[in-house]
Length: 420
Ligand code: LLP
Image 1 (cartoon, rainbow, N blue to C red):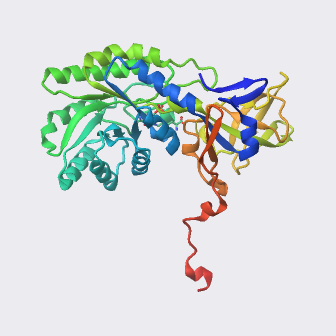
Image 2: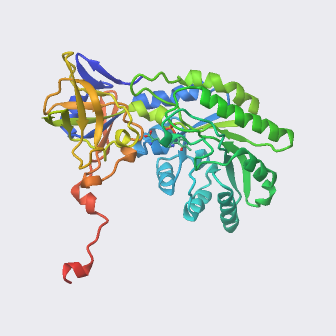
Image 3: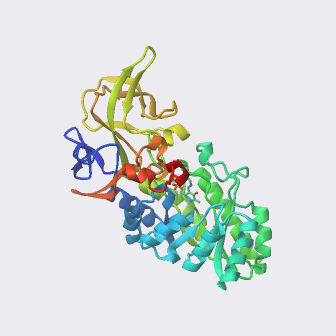
Protein backbone atom coordinates (compact mmCIF):
# COMPACT_ATOMS: atom_id res chain seq x y z
CA UNK A 1 0.00 0.00 0.00
CA UNK A 2 1.26 3.44 -0.82
CA UNK A 3 0.04 6.98 -1.30
CA UNK A 4 0.95 7.37 -4.99
CA UNK A 5 -2.31 7.05 -6.90
CA UNK A 6 -4.02 8.27 -10.05
CA UNK A 7 -6.88 10.67 -9.48
CA UNK A 8 -8.65 11.71 -12.71
CA UNK A 9 -5.72 10.27 -14.68
CA UNK A 10 -3.12 12.35 -12.84
CA UNK A 11 -0.59 10.79 -10.51
CA UNK A 12 -0.81 12.16 -6.97
CA UNK A 13 1.44 11.86 -3.96
CA UNK A 14 -0.95 12.05 -1.03
CA UNK A 15 -3.01 15.14 -1.93
CA UNK A 16 -0.57 16.79 -4.33
CA UNK A 17 -0.40 16.38 -8.10
CA UNK A 18 3.11 15.10 -8.88
CA UNK A 19 3.24 17.12 -12.12
CA UNK A 20 2.87 20.36 -10.16
CA UNK A 21 5.89 19.39 -8.07
CA UNK A 22 7.94 18.50 -11.16
CA UNK A 23 7.01 21.85 -12.77
CA UNK A 24 7.89 23.79 -9.66
CA UNK A 25 11.03 22.00 -8.44
CA UNK A 26 12.43 20.67 -11.71
CA UNK A 27 13.54 17.16 -12.57
CA UNK A 28 15.01 14.71 -11.84
CA UNK A 29 13.50 14.76 -8.39
CA UNK A 30 12.88 12.39 -5.48
CA UNK A 31 9.47 12.66 -3.83
CA UNK A 32 8.52 10.86 -0.61
CA UNK A 33 5.14 10.33 1.00
CA UNK A 34 5.24 10.89 4.75
CA UNK A 35 2.18 8.77 5.43
CA UNK A 36 3.45 5.81 3.41
CA UNK A 37 6.70 5.93 5.35
CA UNK A 38 5.10 6.12 8.75
CA UNK A 39 2.36 3.57 7.94
CA UNK A 40 4.95 0.97 7.03
CA UNK A 41 6.78 1.59 10.27
CA UNK A 42 3.54 1.18 12.23
CA UNK A 43 2.67 -2.00 10.33
CA UNK A 44 5.84 -3.69 11.50
CA UNK A 45 5.71 -2.27 14.98
CA UNK A 46 2.17 -3.45 15.54
CA UNK A 47 2.85 -6.88 14.01
CA UNK A 48 5.49 -7.40 16.71
CA UNK A 49 3.59 -5.74 19.55
CA UNK A 50 3.15 -9.13 21.24
CA UNK A 51 6.86 -9.25 22.13
CA UNK A 52 9.31 -6.75 23.59
CA UNK A 53 10.59 -5.42 20.24
CA UNK A 54 12.24 -2.27 18.90
CA UNK A 55 12.09 -1.52 15.18
CA UNK A 56 15.49 -0.03 14.32
CA UNK A 57 15.09 1.44 10.83
CA UNK A 58 18.11 0.71 8.66
CA UNK A 59 19.58 4.13 7.88
CA UNK A 60 21.44 2.98 4.74
CA UNK A 61 18.16 2.50 2.86
CA UNK A 62 17.52 6.24 2.92
CA UNK A 63 19.41 8.42 5.32
CA UNK A 64 17.73 11.79 4.79
CA UNK A 65 17.55 13.53 8.18
CA UNK A 66 13.89 14.45 7.81
CA UNK A 67 12.90 10.84 7.19
CA UNK A 68 15.02 9.66 10.12
CA UNK A 69 13.45 12.28 12.37
CA UNK A 70 9.95 11.32 11.22
CA UNK A 71 10.58 7.70 12.18
CA UNK A 72 12.45 8.45 15.40
CA UNK A 73 9.54 10.65 16.50
CA UNK A 74 7.25 7.65 16.07
CA UNK A 75 9.44 5.53 18.31
CA UNK A 76 11.87 3.94 15.87
CA UNK A 77 15.43 3.08 16.79
CA UNK A 78 18.11 3.13 14.09
CA UNK A 79 20.45 0.53 12.59
CA UNK A 80 23.72 2.15 11.48
CA UNK A 81 26.86 1.00 9.67
CA UNK A 82 29.32 3.90 9.83
CA UNK A 83 30.45 6.95 11.73
CA UNK A 84 28.53 9.04 9.21
CA UNK A 85 25.32 7.18 9.98
CA UNK A 86 25.96 7.57 13.72
CA UNK A 87 26.30 11.32 13.14
CA UNK A 88 23.02 11.37 11.22
CA UNK A 89 21.23 9.21 13.80
CA UNK A 90 22.21 11.51 16.66
CA UNK A 91 21.42 14.61 14.62
CA UNK A 92 17.94 13.19 13.98
CA UNK A 93 17.50 12.93 17.75
CA UNK A 94 17.66 9.16 18.07
CA UNK A 95 18.36 8.15 21.67
CA UNK A 96 21.76 6.35 21.66
CA UNK A 97 20.20 3.45 23.57
CA UNK A 98 18.09 2.76 20.47
CA UNK A 99 21.05 2.59 18.06
CA UNK A 100 22.60 -0.69 16.90
CA UNK A 101 25.77 -0.70 14.85
CA UNK A 102 26.67 -3.37 12.23
CA UNK A 103 29.43 -3.47 9.52
CA UNK A 104 32.33 -5.84 8.91
CA UNK A 105 34.82 -2.96 8.86
CA UNK A 106 34.33 -0.58 11.78
CA UNK A 107 37.37 1.66 12.28
CA UNK A 108 38.89 2.50 15.65
CA UNK A 109 37.62 6.07 15.44
CA UNK A 110 34.10 4.87 14.64
CA UNK A 111 34.13 2.35 17.49
CA UNK A 112 35.43 4.92 19.94
CA UNK A 113 32.76 7.46 19.05
CA UNK A 114 29.97 4.87 19.31
CA UNK A 115 31.19 3.71 22.74
CA UNK A 116 31.43 7.29 23.99
CA UNK A 117 27.90 8.00 22.78
CA UNK A 118 26.56 4.92 24.57
CA UNK A 119 24.83 3.04 21.75
CA UNK A 120 22.69 0.00 22.61
CA UNK A 121 25.19 -2.49 21.13
CA UNK A 122 27.55 -3.33 18.30
CA UNK A 123 26.66 -6.15 15.94
CA UNK A 124 30.06 -7.78 15.77
CA UNK A 125 31.19 -9.66 12.69
CA UNK A 126 34.51 -11.29 13.64
CA UNK A 127 36.74 -12.26 16.57
CA UNK A 128 39.38 -9.61 15.77
CA UNK A 129 36.63 -7.00 15.81
CA UNK A 130 35.39 -8.20 19.22
CA UNK A 131 38.93 -7.99 20.56
CA UNK A 132 39.37 -4.54 19.13
CA UNK A 133 36.12 -3.21 20.60
CA UNK A 134 37.11 -4.67 23.98
CA UNK A 135 40.54 -3.00 23.74
CA UNK A 136 39.04 0.38 22.86
CA UNK A 137 36.41 0.14 25.62
CA UNK A 138 39.18 -0.67 28.08
CA UNK A 139 41.18 2.35 26.95
CA UNK A 140 38.08 4.52 27.47
CA UNK A 141 37.43 2.83 30.80
CA UNK A 142 33.91 1.88 29.73
CA UNK A 143 31.96 -1.34 29.52
CA UNK A 144 30.28 -1.68 26.13
CA UNK A 145 27.92 -4.27 24.66
CA UNK A 146 27.93 -6.50 21.61
CA UNK A 147 25.68 -8.93 19.79
CA UNK A 148 27.49 -11.58 17.78
CA UNK A 149 26.33 -11.59 14.17
CA UNK A 150 25.74 -15.22 13.26
CA UNK A 151 26.13 -16.40 9.70
CA UNK A 152 23.42 -19.09 9.68
CA UNK A 153 24.37 -20.43 6.23
CA UNK A 154 20.86 -19.99 4.87
CA UNK A 155 19.98 -19.29 1.24
CA UNK A 156 17.90 -16.07 1.10
CA UNK A 157 16.65 -16.67 -2.47
CA UNK A 158 17.38 -13.13 -3.62
CA UNK A 159 19.95 -11.42 -5.86
CA UNK A 160 23.47 -12.72 -5.18
CA UNK A 161 24.82 -9.24 -4.41
CA UNK A 162 22.32 -8.81 -1.58
CA UNK A 163 22.55 -12.32 -0.10
CA UNK A 164 24.43 -12.11 3.20
CA UNK A 165 23.69 -15.26 5.21
CA UNK A 166 25.61 -17.91 3.23
CA UNK A 167 28.85 -19.16 4.72
CA UNK A 168 30.76 -17.93 1.66
CA UNK A 169 29.63 -14.34 2.36
CA UNK A 170 31.86 -11.98 4.33
CA UNK A 171 29.24 -11.41 7.02
CA UNK A 172 28.92 -12.78 10.53
CA UNK A 173 30.48 -15.69 12.38
CA UNK A 174 29.59 -19.35 11.87
CA UNK A 175 27.83 -21.16 14.71
CA UNK A 176 30.83 -23.25 15.79
CA UNK A 177 33.10 -20.28 16.14
CA UNK A 178 30.39 -18.18 17.78
CA UNK A 179 29.99 -20.96 20.33
CA UNK A 180 33.72 -20.97 21.07
CA UNK A 181 33.69 -17.20 21.51
CA UNK A 182 30.72 -17.39 23.87
CA UNK A 183 32.49 -19.98 26.02
CA UNK A 184 35.38 -17.53 26.36
CA UNK A 185 33.16 -14.49 26.87
CA UNK A 186 34.63 -13.73 30.29
CA UNK A 187 37.97 -12.96 28.61
CA UNK A 188 36.51 -9.73 27.30
CA UNK A 189 36.93 -7.55 30.36
CA UNK A 190 35.18 -4.47 28.93
CA UNK A 191 32.64 -6.06 26.64
CA UNK A 192 29.38 -7.73 27.53
CA UNK A 193 28.11 -10.10 24.89
CA UNK A 194 24.41 -9.41 25.30
CA UNK A 195 22.86 -10.91 22.20
CA UNK A 196 22.94 -12.48 18.78
CA UNK A 197 22.24 -10.95 15.39
CA UNK A 198 21.29 -12.31 11.98
CA UNK A 199 20.65 -10.59 8.67
CA UNK A 200 20.46 -13.01 5.76
CA UNK A 201 19.90 -10.64 2.86
CA UNK A 202 17.60 -8.09 1.31
CA UNK A 203 14.43 -8.07 -0.83
CA UNK A 204 13.46 -11.51 0.48
CA UNK A 205 9.89 -12.20 -0.54
CA UNK A 206 9.33 -15.67 0.96
CA UNK A 207 9.07 -16.59 4.61
CA UNK A 208 10.99 -19.89 4.43
CA UNK A 209 14.52 -18.36 4.55
CA UNK A 210 13.57 -16.19 7.55
CA UNK A 211 12.01 -19.14 9.35
CA UNK A 212 15.06 -21.32 8.66
CA UNK A 213 17.46 -18.68 9.97
CA UNK A 214 15.37 -17.77 13.01
CA UNK A 215 14.89 -21.43 13.87
CA UNK A 216 18.62 -22.08 13.67
CA UNK A 217 19.47 -19.18 15.89
CA UNK A 218 16.75 -19.78 18.46
CA UNK A 219 17.79 -23.46 18.74
CA UNK A 220 21.30 -22.17 19.37
CA UNK A 221 20.00 -19.75 22.02
CA UNK A 222 18.13 -22.60 23.74
CA UNK A 223 21.31 -24.66 23.76
CA UNK A 224 23.27 -21.76 25.24
CA UNK A 225 20.66 -21.33 27.93
CA UNK A 226 20.94 -25.00 28.90
CA UNK A 227 24.65 -24.55 29.54
CA UNK A 228 24.16 -21.37 31.51
CA UNK A 229 24.87 -18.72 28.87
CA UNK A 230 22.01 -16.26 28.99
CA UNK A 231 21.52 -13.39 26.57
CA UNK A 232 19.23 -10.39 26.50
CA UNK A 233 18.72 -9.53 22.81
CA UNK A 234 17.98 -11.26 19.55
CA UNK A 235 18.42 -8.99 16.53
CA UNK A 236 16.64 -10.54 13.54
CA UNK A 237 17.93 -8.00 10.98
CA UNK A 238 16.01 -6.65 8.01
CA UNK A 239 15.46 -8.03 4.54
CA UNK A 240 11.69 -7.96 4.06
CA UNK A 241 10.89 -7.67 0.37
CA UNK A 242 8.45 -5.23 -1.24
CA UNK A 243 6.50 -5.08 -4.49
CA UNK A 244 8.48 -3.69 -7.42
CA UNK A 245 6.66 -5.57 -10.20
CA UNK A 246 4.38 -8.47 -9.39
CA UNK A 247 6.08 -10.00 -6.37
CA UNK A 248 3.90 -11.34 -3.58
CA UNK A 249 5.99 -10.51 -0.53
CA UNK A 250 4.90 -11.28 2.97
CA UNK A 251 2.91 -8.71 4.85
CA UNK A 252 4.26 -7.61 8.21
CA UNK A 253 1.51 -9.70 9.84
CA UNK A 254 2.42 -12.88 8.01
CA UNK A 255 6.13 -12.38 8.61
CA UNK A 256 5.44 -11.92 12.32
CA UNK A 257 3.09 -14.88 12.48
CA UNK A 258 5.71 -17.21 11.00
CA UNK A 259 8.56 -16.24 13.28
CA UNK A 260 6.90 -15.05 16.49
CA UNK A 261 6.54 -18.56 17.96
CA UNK A 262 10.34 -18.95 17.80
CA UNK A 263 10.99 -15.45 19.11
CA UNK A 264 8.63 -15.95 22.06
CA UNK A 265 10.32 -19.21 22.96
CA UNK A 266 13.69 -17.44 23.08
CA UNK A 267 12.35 -15.11 25.78
CA UNK A 268 14.71 -12.39 24.52
CA UNK A 269 14.10 -8.76 23.61
CA UNK A 270 13.83 -8.42 19.85
CA UNK A 271 15.44 -5.91 17.50
CA UNK A 272 14.31 -5.59 13.86
CA UNK A 273 16.34 -3.73 11.23
CA UNK A 274 14.04 -3.10 8.26
CA UNK A 275 15.04 -0.58 5.63
CA UNK A 276 13.37 -1.26 2.30
CA UNK A 277 10.06 -2.38 3.84
CA UNK A 278 9.65 1.02 5.48
CA UNK A 279 10.89 3.43 2.84
CA UNK A 280 10.94 1.52 -0.48
CA UNK A 281 7.42 2.24 -1.65
CA UNK A 282 7.36 5.63 0.07
CA UNK A 283 9.45 7.26 -2.65
CA UNK A 284 9.45 7.88 -6.39
CA UNK A 285 11.95 9.35 -8.81
CA UNK A 286 10.38 11.83 -11.22
CA UNK A 287 12.15 12.35 -14.52
CA UNK A 288 11.53 14.13 -17.81
CA UNK A 289 11.71 12.63 -21.29
CA UNK A 290 14.41 14.51 -23.22
CA UNK A 291 14.41 12.70 -26.56
CA UNK A 292 12.87 9.75 -28.35
CA UNK A 293 15.43 7.96 -30.46
CA UNK A 294 14.64 5.29 -33.03
CA UNK A 295 17.40 2.99 -34.19
CA UNK A 296 17.10 0.07 -36.61
CA UNK A 297 16.82 -2.32 -33.66
CA UNK A 298 15.39 -0.35 -30.80
CA UNK A 299 13.48 2.61 -29.56
CA UNK A 300 15.16 4.57 -26.78
CA UNK A 301 13.39 6.89 -24.38
CA UNK A 302 16.15 9.21 -23.19
CA UNK A 303 15.40 10.74 -19.80
CA UNK A 304 17.09 13.28 -17.56
CA UNK A 305 17.72 10.78 -14.71
CA UNK A 306 20.65 8.42 -14.90
CA UNK A 307 22.37 5.55 -13.17
CA UNK A 308 24.04 8.05 -10.84
CA UNK A 309 20.57 8.99 -9.52
CA UNK A 310 19.21 5.43 -9.23
CA UNK A 311 21.78 2.70 -9.69
CA UNK A 312 19.65 -0.35 -8.85
CA UNK A 313 18.78 -1.32 -12.46
CA UNK A 314 22.43 -1.03 -13.56
CA UNK A 315 23.80 -2.81 -10.51
CA UNK A 316 21.27 -5.58 -9.87
CA UNK A 317 19.24 -5.55 -13.06
CA UNK A 318 16.48 -4.41 -10.71
CA UNK A 319 12.97 -3.75 -12.00
CA UNK A 320 11.29 -0.44 -11.21
CA UNK A 321 7.83 0.22 -12.57
CA UNK A 322 7.68 3.34 -14.74
CA UNK A 323 4.44 5.27 -14.96
CA UNK A 324 3.44 8.38 -16.89
CA UNK A 325 2.30 11.21 -14.64
CA UNK A 326 -0.69 11.62 -16.91
CA UNK A 327 -2.42 8.35 -17.63
CA UNK A 328 -3.84 7.94 -21.10
CA UNK A 329 -4.49 5.48 -23.97
CA UNK A 330 -3.57 1.86 -23.72
CA UNK A 331 -1.38 1.60 -26.83
CA UNK A 332 1.95 0.23 -25.68
CA UNK A 333 5.34 0.11 -27.28
CA UNK A 334 8.51 -1.64 -26.26
CA UNK A 335 11.32 0.73 -25.35
CA UNK A 336 14.59 1.02 -23.43
CA UNK A 337 14.45 3.85 -20.91
CA UNK A 338 17.97 5.22 -20.66
CA UNK A 339 19.78 8.09 -18.97
CA UNK A 340 22.26 10.67 -20.24
CA UNK A 341 25.37 9.00 -18.77
CA UNK A 342 28.19 7.76 -20.96
CA UNK A 343 27.76 4.07 -20.22
CA UNK A 344 25.60 1.39 -21.79
CA UNK A 345 24.74 0.25 -18.25
CA UNK A 346 22.91 3.53 -17.79
CA UNK A 347 19.33 2.34 -18.08
CA UNK A 348 16.28 2.38 -15.86
CA UNK A 349 14.31 -0.14 -17.91
CA UNK A 350 15.02 -2.48 -20.80
CA UNK A 351 12.59 -3.88 -23.36
CA UNK A 352 9.79 -2.32 -21.34
CA UNK A 353 6.26 -1.94 -22.68
CA UNK A 354 5.19 1.62 -21.93
CA UNK A 355 2.25 3.69 -23.11
CA UNK A 356 3.40 5.89 -26.00
CA UNK A 357 5.70 8.47 -24.48
CA UNK A 358 6.15 12.06 -25.69
CA UNK A 359 9.20 14.29 -25.52
CA UNK A 360 8.96 16.73 -22.63
CA UNK A 361 6.59 14.64 -20.55
CA UNK A 362 7.33 13.42 -17.05
CA UNK A 363 7.63 9.83 -15.90
CA UNK A 364 7.58 8.40 -12.38
CA UNK A 365 10.02 5.65 -11.48
CA UNK A 366 8.21 3.84 -8.71
CA UNK A 367 9.46 2.18 -5.49
CA UNK A 368 12.58 4.31 -5.48
CA UNK A 369 12.54 5.31 -1.80
CA UNK A 370 15.04 2.67 -0.66
CA UNK A 371 18.61 2.54 -1.95
CA UNK A 372 17.77 5.29 -4.45
CA UNK A 373 19.12 8.61 -3.23
CA UNK A 374 21.34 6.89 -0.65
CA UNK A 375 23.29 5.13 -3.42
CA UNK A 376 23.37 8.11 -5.75
CA UNK A 377 26.59 9.79 -6.84
CA UNK A 378 28.02 12.74 -8.73
CA UNK A 379 29.24 10.60 -11.63
CA UNK A 380 29.56 12.61 -14.86
CA UNK A 381 29.60 15.68 -12.57
CA UNK A 382 25.88 15.50 -12.19
CA UNK A 383 24.42 17.32 -9.22
CA UNK A 384 22.63 15.14 -6.72
CA UNK A 385 18.90 15.61 -6.74
CA UNK A 386 16.47 17.54 -4.63
CA UNK A 387 14.28 15.52 -2.26
CA UNK A 388 10.75 16.50 -1.27
CA UNK A 389 8.53 15.24 1.50
CA UNK A 390 4.79 15.39 0.96
CA UNK A 391 2.47 15.43 3.95
CA UNK A 392 -1.13 15.46 2.72
CA UNK A 393 -1.38 18.78 0.82
CA UNK A 394 1.90 20.20 2.09
CA UNK A 395 5.31 19.87 0.53
CA UNK A 396 8.70 20.31 2.17
CA UNK A 397 12.11 20.46 0.52
CA UNK A 398 14.12 18.03 2.64
CA UNK A 399 17.24 18.29 0.51
CA UNK A 400 18.10 21.04 -1.93
CA UNK A 401 19.34 20.14 -5.37
CA UNK A 402 23.12 20.44 -5.37
CA UNK A 403 24.67 23.44 -7.06
CA UNK A 404 27.65 23.44 -9.41
CA UNK A 405 29.67 24.95 -6.56
CA UNK A 406 28.74 21.96 -4.40
CA UNK A 407 30.40 19.75 -7.01
CA UNK A 408 33.82 21.32 -6.47
CA UNK A 409 33.41 22.44 -2.86
CA UNK A 410 36.14 20.19 -1.46
CA UNK A 411 38.52 20.38 -4.38
CA UNK A 412 41.62 22.48 -4.52
CA UNK A 413 43.96 23.36 -7.35
CA UNK A 414 47.54 23.44 -5.97
CA UNK A 415 49.28 26.77 -6.18
CA UNK A 416 51.91 25.56 -8.67
CA UNK A 417 49.16 24.90 -11.21
CA UNK A 418 47.89 28.41 -10.67
CA UNK A 419 51.36 29.76 -11.54
CA UNK A 420 51.75 31.19 -8.03
N1 LLP B 1 20.56 -4.90 8.61
C1 LLP B 1 21.76 -5.11 8.02
C2 LLP B 1 22.86 -5.61 8.82
C3 LLP B 1 21.92 -4.84 6.64
O1 LLP B 1 23.09 -5.07 6.07
C4 LLP B 1 20.81 -4.35 5.90
C5 LLP B 1 20.96 -4.07 4.46
C6 LLP B 1 19.60 -4.12 6.56
C7 LLP B 1 19.51 -4.41 7.91
C8 LLP B 1 18.38 -3.58 5.86
O2 LLP B 1 17.94 -4.45 4.88
P1 LLP B 1 16.52 -4.23 4.15
O3 LLP B 1 15.43 -4.35 5.18
O4 LLP B 1 16.52 -2.89 3.55
O5 LLP B 1 16.47 -5.32 3.14
N2 LLP B 1 21.45 -1.82 -2.15
C9 LLP B 1 20.67 -3.03 -2.19
C10 LLP B 1 20.28 -3.52 -0.81
C11 LLP B 1 21.49 -3.70 0.10
C12 LLP B 1 21.11 -4.08 1.52
C13 LLP B 1 22.27 -3.94 2.42
N3 LLP B 1 22.01 -4.29 3.79
C14 LLP B 1 19.45 -2.80 -3.07
O6 LLP B 1 19.31 -1.71 -3.64
O7 LLP B 1 18.64 -3.71 -3.27
